Image 1 (cartoon, rainbow, N blue to C red):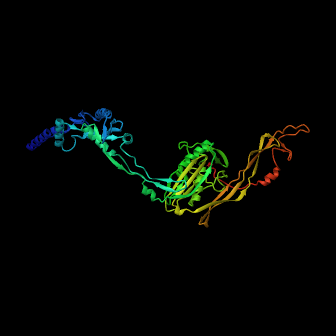
Image 2 (tube, rainbow, N blue to C red; image 1 turned 45 degrees about the horizontal axis):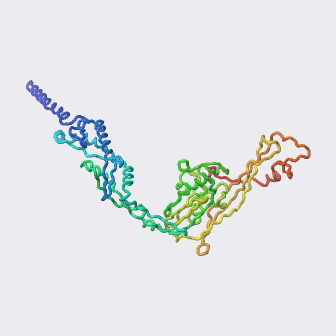
Length: 496
């Protein structure tokens, strides 16, 4: 029993003697210190061995700074340019390079790691550069430098003649520098200690080809409309221009529903809009984007005349001056929209023209859909306004002053009449418009009576036919003549 115990003790001691050195060797001899780069690793002649991540980052940052201050010669046949690497957005991907350096000699078996470290200490290991480029800076600088050797592609476009005929201006492919290859070639040049890179050009296709536009079958004018405005109202004119430009060269797919609010976007200072008169609760007040509704109204009439489908439309709460009653279209972002559908089988092309106190929106398409269209708007009922009397203690008793003029309301219907070869083929009702009357407000004095005048004196402000200062006709008759007419409109501000 005692012999067995002694043998076991001897075995344990021997195992400890063998395992302990191996543990020490495996942690210290076969592997470099944790998070340290093994000796012999360098990048472009700069030693990184023995550095931790922070030290390597500092060292590589110095190398990067020196590299970015160097010039590289870009050559293509007889042309050349020598920009700084910094100018073309060159940077080292330092984190990736440091991670790769830290992993050297730390992969595989213990023996493999040891052998790899010994070999690197003896012969050295040069890290490959991993480059990052600020892509926009690279593309812009190369584009600026190579204008003499590259050609930009030209997209096909529509050209409209004075007579409304549409033709396609053809596309042209171009050439440009292969930036992907250029980035790789610059890195190779750095490693081979070369300062010259030969550019490779590649073809650049036009984004919109002649064939694509021809397949849209846009041939001529389907319908258009013009409204006029006072160009001396500069803020309102500016708003009309901003919103109107959103529809210039707009392409509409077959079956697509076009939303005015989606195309134009929010009416905000950031979008470039200014303060101009808008309609709020049947009154004109200053508001952001005043004038935008003239664009939606012009578009509405163009759509009617192009014989397209109206999806959504609202009238103003009061008539406006630049179109007949019943032919306006108000819009309020996130509340009231104007929408129409391209109910043809081909594309539509819109053009807007703004200047000299007028805005025109024309709609072009396949002339096979062209019809003779006229729009008829009818006022079917006039709505008299009510007269409201308000006591005013600041006016002498018996005095009446018109504080707000009244305006009639209207109910109108709009019809579209379609003809072909001089024969009416379709008549459809397009809209019902309800314009709310604006009540007249008269202030009635309840204050202290005015002093009596001397006998025979005449007050110039008095209407001698009624004996009531400043009021024409009989007040009671006026009240009877202007009954209250029910009607409601959204209280959102409407751009006139």
